[in-house]
Image (cartoon, rainbow, N blue to C red; front, side, top):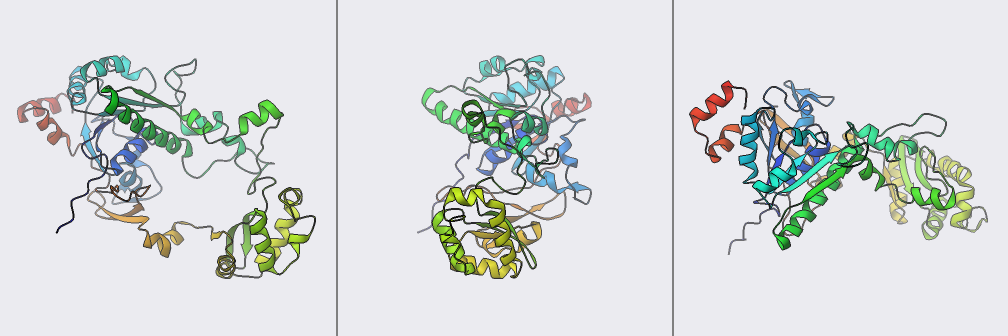
Length: 400
C-alpha cells in the first residue's frame, strides 16, 4: 500500500508579494516555505534591490537572493502605470493574500488600497508591513529595521555599556516583523475560514521589536528601572555567558541552583555551599567574580573537553559557531537543518537554512531558489487570459 502524498499546509494558497528588501519578502518566504504559491511582483525597470545584496555573489548572482526569494515566482509589473494596476487587480481576484511593505499610502496613491482590492475580492487578506504602522502621526515616515530597532528599544540594549549602541549582524527588526506578519496572515486566514471575509494585517517594525522587549516597559513605569547595555552578560543571571577555552569560546548556562551545584561539582569546588554563590541572588551579586573563576578553569581546557564534561553533568553548554562550524555540525546534518538547493541563476547548489518549524504531518519544503527577474510573467499572464500579442504589447509599453 503506497503512502498518500502529503502536501504542505498552505498548498493552494496564492500570495501576491509586493515590496522589496527583507521585512515583507521574509513574510512571503515563510508562507512559501509551507506551500503557498508566492507571486513576487517587481517593476521591470526597478527590480528588488535584494537581488544585489549580500557579501558574496557567484556568477554575479547574489546568494542572499537565493534564500529571501526561495519558493517564489517572479512577475514583472509596473504598478505606476494604469495597465499594470489593471493586471494586478485581475491577479488579486484569484489570490488569497497580498503582502506589501511600501510606505503607507503608496497603494492608495495607485488606486490599489484595501477598499478597492477587497471590493474585487472580499476574501483577500492584505498584510501590510511598514516601519511605523498604517496609522498614527509617524505612519507616513519611511522606516528601516535599524530605525525600528532603535524606536522599539532593542538598540539601546545591544553592545558594551561604555560604548554607543551596537547592532546585530543581521536585520533583526525586519525578520521579526516578517515573522509577525506571517503569523498575522495565518490568523487572518483562519478567521476567514469561519467568516468568509479577509481583513487587513498591520505589522509595524518598531512594534514587532517591542514585542520582544520582555518586561522593559513596566520595569521603568512601575519601578523606575531603565535597562542598560550589559555587553555579553545578563545582569544578575549567573553563570550564563561566554567563557574562553584554550582553543575558542563556549557558552555555559548554569544559573539555576541545581545546575550550578552540578557545575561546581564538575569543576571540583565548594562554590555551591559558599554564601557568595549558593543562591541565585548571591550569584547575581558576585557575577563578575564568579565569571572570572569559571574562566580560569575553562582556559585550562579545550572547547571539546568543556562540552564533554558539561554534557556528562547535564549542564547546558555549546560552541560559539560561525557558518563554517554550522556546515560541519553533525546534529544539524542529522536534522537536515541546512539544505542544498540548486539555483539555475547561480549554476550551483546553494546551502541554506531549512524550513522552521518542522511539522510532523505536513512539513514545509524548499522547492526552488530565488527566481530570475520576470521568469514567470508569461505563465501567470497566460492564466489571467492575456494572449501572446497582448503580452508583447505590454512589454513594448514597459508594463511588464
